[in-house]
Length: 202
Image 1 (tube, rainbow, N blue to C red):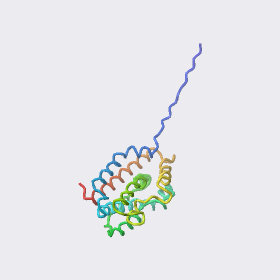
Image 2: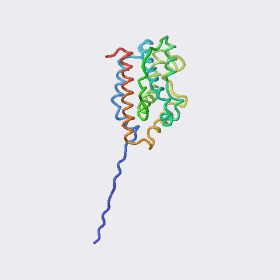
Image 3: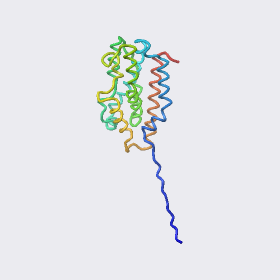
Image 4: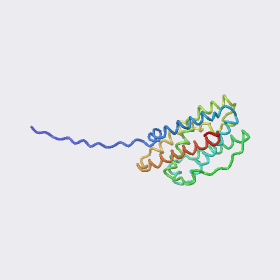
């Protein structure tokens, strides 16, 4: 009786970068929620202004990256992203002048820049709840004081999905994935430090 041997070759399936970012930075994402709860940004307009100033400095960090041709090639629709101008306009509405600060992303380049953008774009996607609080608790709106929380004109989900497609393209190698994740960790660290500073949290 003849027998044949079947050889099965298994190919390792690499998790999508967007999936790795979500899972591997989940604890940092929750830490941002905790800091926001401690800061109570919707307890008063003064408290909310502290949040907006933190947002403004972080968005300056993000939009600094947009000048990099490599970032422009990786994320073609940069013109619809970023909330630096919106945050600055909100501070003006609230009668607050932003203090000077360094650009924390000055030495960041591709592919780590995508990790920084992941944190920013994720916060835009999730800002619908914050916008509702700003409206109901503080009487603000997308036209006054809460521009930085507004959805993109095309909608939050559509623009987010386009960014995820940029993250998960095949041209990013495994080693580059580690750099993107490290960029996201650094970005969470920066935003957390800004929240602590502006809310005077230990």
